Amino acid sequence: MEILPVLALFLVRLVAGYAVLLACFAPQVTKGSWVRVSLFLIAALALVAVAAKAPLVPCLVTVAAAVLVERGRTFEVKPLSTVLYLLPGALWALYSMEMNLGAAHGPPWIYPLIGLLAGLTIGGTLAAMLLGHGYLTARGLSFTPFRRMAMLLLIVLGLRTLGVLPVILDGGHAMGDWIFLSARGAFGLLLPLVFGWMAYQCIKIESNQSATGIYYPMVVLVGAGELIAAYLRIEEGLPA
Image (cartoon, rainbow, N blue to C red):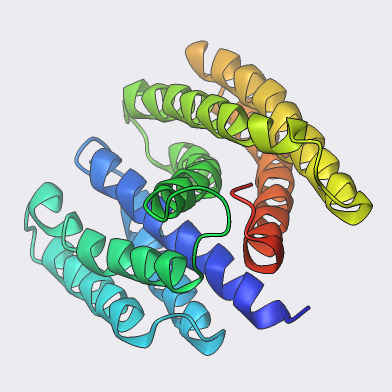
């Protein structure tokens, strides 16, 4: 197994999912450093993806857009009008990579959708953890964006679980694939769903420290699960 293609797919999915989340929530988070940190993080992850042999041009377009958006924020340009510029490059990179890998199971168009849902899963978990940190320093920031993000993350995790369930229940897998799929389902989806619900309950009572602490292990678990999913996608063509 080559590690770089797995890492490249994982990072491209992460960047695309995080970019979508940022476009949705940046206009709502008007204080603190969350948007700025997210922009730098997206740019850094896109560059690492290029090093791992992800599609060069769309990743560089994403990096350039992140830099331009940050400069726009510096000059007080409305975030909604600029954060949307992240999406073309990020979604282009995701689509290119998923389609170049081919379709071993099901129609080709389903793979970019699964890749985006995977990106929203890991990107949403990471974004929620970083936003929780933002509430520690941004005084007077409404908890509404944090609560909405936590609920959206639960929905995305639920959809991701439903999408993977038919793959797990398929009886034609080799023993090695069964082991990966079992670990991916139990520790990468079901356990994060429990943690995500706990974090949401904490956010409802505005206990952001507790919620942020819960999102830490969620990032690890969801990240490990999506790395396994990227491996199964590349090695076996499974939409896991």
